[in-house]
Image (cartoon, rainbow, N blue to C red):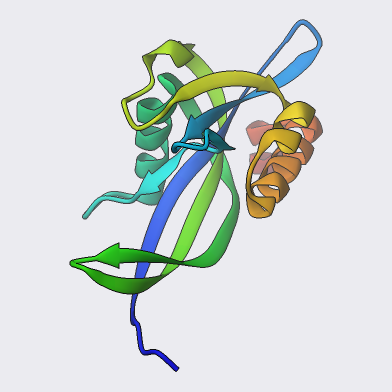
Length: 157
């Protein structure tokens, strides 16, 4: 059995949504040579809060500014990569947040992304490359359709 160096990475990202004309849409990005569709996410910087990293990554990868409404879920997975010529096993954690679209254009995504676009939420679930992200979007849809809790109601106790 081969021994591999193992490292941990923590990323944050978001499910950015908008509603209009009777349709619920989320922002997806296409990355890599194969044009894989996924949710925007990226590594959390040193001294950076996960919530701030999620908003920054969404802005960089989709061109959109959003309001963070709270954590949807945390997913974990393992993968292999190469670092300094060695094969490295990575344990990845990703925190996904629900985000309401405020402004911006998907045309303003960064160079790491092939394309960013708005997609109707059910179609987005079908397009996503990873089962874990499909589950995150399904949970996001449930939260959006349930509607936000009224902060005044919850504070009156």
